[in-house]
Image (cartoon, rainbow, N blue to C red):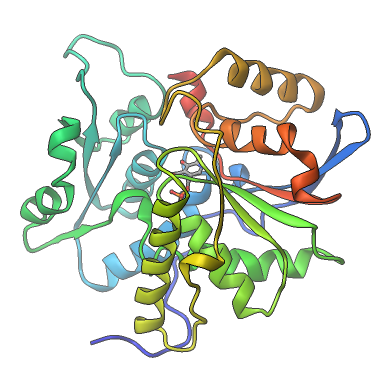
Length: 312
Ligand SMILES: Cc1ncc(COP(=O)(O)O)c(C=O)c1O
């Protein structure tokens, strides 16, 4: 039965609150505030740590002994889930999407290396099989498995970013001119949108698409918001046409880099020490660099993590 309590239960997995830092040496005369959610932890870091606090609380409450989830072969979400599962004494089964599964003798790198180190069971699936990911996971879950959707992006996981808005509102004296994040499976954007509305904060929010397009992410946020109000009726409802999704920065597509993106990651790192990742934050931050006027004088960028993708 749906719970009508105002907030779901949560484990403590992330190092919170993460700081908001000011960077003013990236470009002359330009300042950006950065919410350092890349610092939610070490191996268990990035935006997924916030979502997993809620998802794994539910898994434990339901008596699960294993968690199952899915993503790209270098998925940050899968790595964070695998590390969190190890920490909680749960088994972990990952369905990883790839056209070319690594051979038994190939050394794993980046996130996949960490998946292996913490003992997650890995099943490689093709992009075509990935279309049936929910059925694959449900079939494999058995009686003691808890299935987490791609990116941890459902109504429960989105609480991680509903709560992050409360955290940020307690940190800033004046709200920023806008909030900008990468959007890949939509849960972070949905949580921020719901969280801002819930607190009556009128700060423009922009999700920068790193795959798919604006219509896709607007529909995802609408769906997650509908599911969330169904389960927690006190939450405000966010509709598709209220969501700003910035297009034009996915480059060659999900997980594929360009020389321009690599150059921006390097120049930001050299000017400021801020390390962006190639799949999400590197692409999203380019929107700020290329169109600074769009986001106002004090934009706040949510650094959602992903550093291990640089090492893949
Ligand atoms: C580092 C990083 N940033 C951003 C995102 C996007 O967040 P979401 O999936 O909630 O849209 C992800 C995951 O997809 C991620 O791993």
